[in-house]
Amino acid sequence: MSLYAAYAGNLDARLMTRRAPYSPLRATGWLNGWRLTFGGEQMGWEGSLATIVEDPVEQVFVALYEIAPMDEESLDRWVGVGLDIYRRARVRVVTLDGEEPAWVYVLNGYEGGLPSARYLGEIADAAESAGAPHDYVMELRKRPC
Image 1 (cartoon, rainbow, N blue to C red):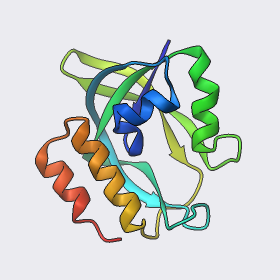
Image 2: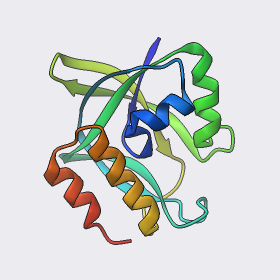
Image 3: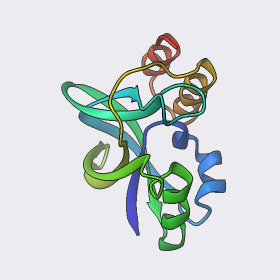
């Protein structure tokens, strides 16, 4: 099994049980040196899409899932890897047990544009359900949309 670090809607473990039913939540942690942002406005149905970019002073809350081989392809399809919307990137996640190598989905588009209020609310709700700190969730809820 490989480790997938979710940072947007897939932070929600209930949602992930539908998208990747054989892939349990393992832990939560942080991507240090990365920032949550939005881009690819022309690729989404309702505004810009979530992605991460390197930023030495920022961090992104993530949920680590042990992705079973039978779930990898369906998860790739769900996020649009085959449509060239997202690609995989390797990262290191800091958890309470130490650092873990994992992969994330990164948008194949330029940073910029605003997400819809519904999409941003979905991400904030997912972060809250995954146990993100209150200030992190509130920062998400206050972002422009």
